[in-house]
Picture 1 (spheres, rainbow, N blue to C red):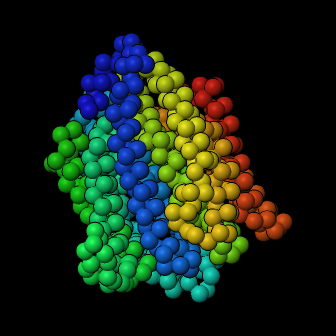
Picture 2: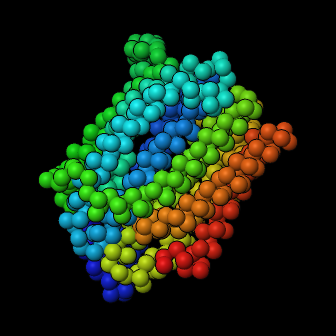
Picture 3: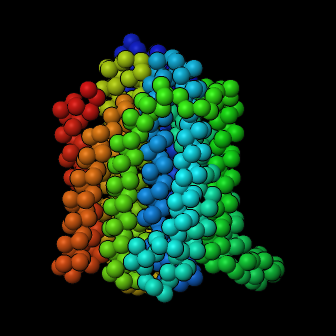
Length: 464
């Protein structure tokens, strides 16, 4: 999709909803499919590890929030490049967009090396910080170490994939993501389980396996991430609009300054909120193995039902950046009036499905009656709040495209630490509450974001 021509055609301010809707869908559906594949693999990973027992599930789940912390911090850097590149393309300045792509390669390498050293050196301490049961400290630590050895390639896949999306190419990251997930699934099958006899269609044979358990799951993910980083780099290098070919890899302050100005508040936001997820999970882990397992599985199930929201957010960020680059304020307002009701409608639908099928979805990952009951309860609680959460997702996405990341930083940090963390601490550590009260605090956090972002939108401050 040529976003520069789309933006210029929109400068007259005469685009109708019917004209913009195909553009929105064309940008959103590949991201949705990519995230659907990622979630499907997460489902399969959790189910495969779940066959190894509750301890294995708890060991993997105990480090998952640290994974969010690192990945979301890296993703925040990509937001700075998304804002810069989408606005440059909207203004027809493709040379600036290519220069920014070159700087994105440089930043990916520096950031990836830094996080590799950091995560590998801290791998033995993470289970302790997460208050994991001492019996599974070693298992969780080894899993985390292997998962983060290819952090350079994971960083490249995240940041360079965002560069492609900023240029309106959401299909390439989707294709690379699908192959990453396929590699992960296949390797899981051979690395997790031991060599075993199988029967398929009346034909009996021996299936080879390494029998590495959750270490095999980590190794499969690490190999898949390595492929993803290499593949996304070469696809970006050959891209017509934002190829970094011929660009200098020396720091360019005129590009990095505006990118970091946008990225830094978003990085602080994601770091602070992801750190909040770590603290939140740590308090849940302290409730015992049952709560940890139910929380891990419920989180995995819930993530699939946010796919419409996050897919639409990518399209909202890209198109709002194009509109600002083209100085088309009328189109910017029109986009918001299309995105918000569309997003709410999608989240009502996905929330309804989650509410109806929560017990059956939990059953995919565990047959423990207590885990099933507890997980189903919290999933049905959060399903009711999903339409409200869809509003801040879209407004924040459009603000990212405009380069406005300070207000979202304040809103998200306020909600996370003053509502979710403080509330969960009070409920679980002081009053002796359980996982249900912790998820109640999480829902209160989402509702506060709905109010804060809603007021910000209605007053018009989101685009000034």
